[in-house]
Length: 528
Image (tube, rainbow, N blue to C red; front, side, top):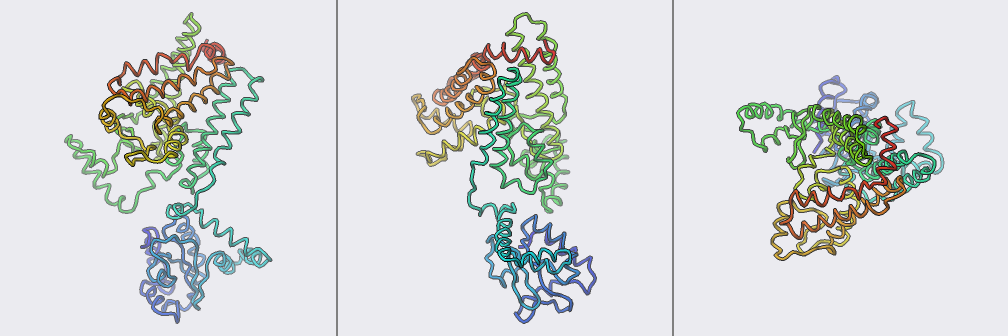
């Protein structure tokens, strides 16, 4: 039951230590046969076992770090998952291991904060800590602190057994930052107010996603956290801050996958590689270092080479700083500038960030997935346009509302979307068209687009001081369009998609916003 890390540690110890200081496997068995002694028969200086959770990365790392220190003092580290240890301590297989234990050579069993105090007495520079523990009330405080740390050390088998935490701290930034940005509206230019409000909402959403995924992103360096907040527009904190794909392979995969990868390369030359073989060998489209990066469903591939993204960035720069200044119509010039800005950011720089982060092994998903290829309104908003905001709306609006009403008649969780083909077949089998505006998913869909509209009101209408309600109406129309596609699947297609998304786009970026915000911004950066 030992983890491979602890097995490697024990093997290294047995090979590297002198014979008089090694506790062999036979000694382990001798230690567990009776209660008369725990000391290995080959080592008279042995004083006891320090038992730790071998399935916990942080515990294993600590055992490695202090192994030499305590070995010199007669203590050996051993995983709690060792068979004779579990029998001796009456531990159930698979049960969460909540504390360290020490079994001394004279038969004492020490656990919890007492382990830390006991070990502190063995090291001269830790004596002050041991003395501090003797003060009145300190032992109880140390015990509570130890158990809190043990329960929050981030291991998956510990996390699953933790009670649910409070969620309200995750919303603090979204509650505080936008009002602060609104207070500065009268002291700055409208275009500055737009960027300030967008930044406040962006950081608030970052904190919300970070807080929500905090159990899965422990043991992460501060540099990566700062990169998630300021150098990555995506909102999937669990993936971005999780263990990188390059470091998440087991010893077995490191031994087996290179040979499989070689076989796959030979097969690819013959043009006969199946997707299953690529999955088995690790050559998935989304893997860092491969020639292509694919979407989650394999529908879209983005080249790992940066040239297309650089080309889109340059095209955006050309539209923003080159074409717009020669257009006489102010509104048209503003629209050209906005298109150029979207090309620079969403299709250019953001794609370059995807390539860069994936190159270093991070799980960074694409923000845009060829939106012009959308054949339905739901495909455009659900898969291809601004995956970062789509993730937010799905996790924090749609799914909570859909699940609040329980499961449908079929027993399926309404918060789990059907695959496109299944959804289409289900809709067609209903016979007569039915508009499900009052259904669970219908309400959740409209609510998600309503929230999106209100957020765009803060970024668009408030800085422009006009056009209130138009962005909200635009996004409600998108929700109605999706529900209409579900009821009337025969109208799906690019024409219906363009009519719903592109034709009323002036509701979203209404003329007051273009005149009062975009055009002054373009003048400020020298585009006009």
